[in-house]
Length: 528
Image (cartoon, rainbow, N blue to C red; front, side):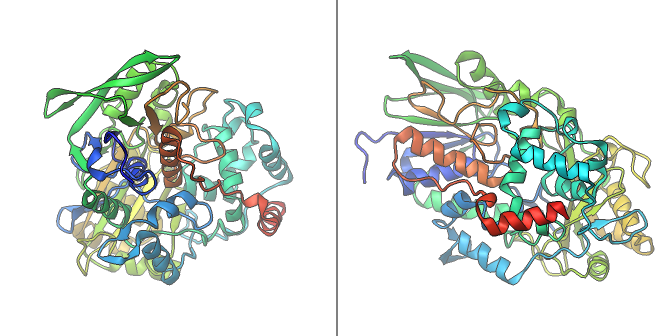
């Protein structure tokens, strides 16, 4: 259908939430693509779903996402409508599911000890107190947990268990993160309890998420006429009070160092992405450490802070960006031009590339984990080149072998620390000579997990909002879990359907506990 008066939609940001909102406006609201403008301050779309580089300078992804078929219902709903890259006869969803039918995840070396031995990760290590605390957490309402930290809920023994090493490195939890978020995760991913040691429920994309998801979405939107205005940084908005509500009547920003303003018509809509987990990410190099940017420079945080000061219903951004030492960690991407490390890991773990999921070095001072993806992992990755992605949670501690904090290490030093954890020192020199390691520091990467109070996260459609809605990881969606692509896509559904009054059901949040067989299997694992 064609809407009267040709209303326009302005989408601020171009992460998966913004791209999904544009898809939904076209698919479910009948909007013309040419009436949709995506304003992105970076020169590339995709937000946290990135993938860049080449075989010479080194490939780079800041992160890697693990999906499941059961829980990511909104994501699959959107991706079912987008043609896959290079094969318009099937959807992105079909391509991802077909890939995972062939490349099955079954980690053979999920945890590794300080003597280079593979641990029996199925032995979760709970004692009775741990089990009681876990059950108590699952049955305690969020309102009673409040702003409590995880380490204020569990006894010290819990944090020494294999289970916590598995869980925290799978989902990137720190001990000081929100107990509410941990509870949501456990309820949401209860089905993973029996297979947490193999990550058998994990689904990955054929290539990195930028090449497998973002590029097809961008192409599909561009073919429908959606306008992408890259290098456009939105910094502020003007509000007008109207009948007990408020509308945005003007957006302010800058492009190529020059200010711009966008005046909105009465029927125009605005979708604002608040905050960013990858804001102010700093790239290092093989011989250069990545810098930690402490003062927010990224427009996503600047915009949110200004809006929160000007209008009610925008939450409290400072709860999430107020202390980067509580939310930062560092990831790295290895580009290997020699198969020696890949072959050694295959022999050591029993996993072919793409099937092993995370390998965590449990006694690593950095709590370092790596993933060996299926090759190619990048669209422009040639034969004879392989990649490894990894990250560390404790970036301020000196390494076990490199006497420097991970945050101060070059890519070369991180590679050496990794090789020594694996015990492959006989090939260290050739790896250092034939590899490129690129570290990236991300100040806000786990900021979504911050302990928060009521009202810190705003509603997707704030009370009184007449022509705007909010997107991304920092809005409040009851029962769902942040730090997932699913959360961003679900925010887009709530934003588009809620603001436009579309009566299309949003897929329900998956609750594993509602399935008696799944709940029983999880409880058996918990009880041991």
